[in-house]
Amino acid sequence: MAAALLASDAAGQALPEHMFAGAHAGAVGLRVHRNTVLGALSHALRLAFPAVDKLVGEAFFDRMAVDYARARPPAAPQLDEYGRDFPDFIAGFPGTETLPYLRGLAQFEWLFAELARCRAEPGFTGPSLQLEGGVRLRFAAPLRLHAARFPVEPLRAAILAGDAQALAAIDLQRGGDCHYALWRSEQGVNLRPVSAASARFLAAVYAGGDAATALAAAASAGGPGDIAIAQLLAQEIVPAGFVQVSATPAG
Picture: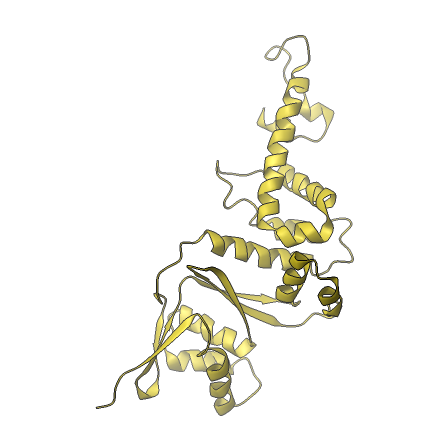
């Protein structure tokens, strides 16, 4: 029955006559349930990927969602994790040839949806980092880092706001390196664009590295020297909403 619900062809939708005998073929009675199942799965994806939905339009999104449901039906009775590989599935989907950033946008939206489901930890309960001079950085949890080839954060914001002028101002023809830090707080999902150096610094911190390891990781991104790296981190990391700075009194 599950296979018949998700089948797209008449042969696959047919049910054994000896089990579903009646005035009408079993497939006829199953039709309403098929629409309910596929509609529910499409709705679950629509909630997780609102900007993708708005960008391509409701009808086209439903086509992608139904094809995805038939190819990769949910493996659990709850749908929180349903759609994790949807970005990979829609990459190169027929009709999206002019949207090379679609997969990256969908990946970004999934990260938003994933963090939105996380429980916000009170205070700064993530890793901590001891710096010279008694300064300690305490980080928020959970925090995720995201790297993209396109500026997916302003793209998502412009699409959801319906701001055609802002959308037109975004250069989507040339890929590049865009890095974002996203974290969950009691207020919801927060976001901050960061440089490649800051992204590597944060990745090292959340992997359990000490200050020397994190600074070396930041320097490996290339670009400015050690002093400039420290200044960059002071500008991007210290004022960020995902870090708390404290100092141990001297003496």
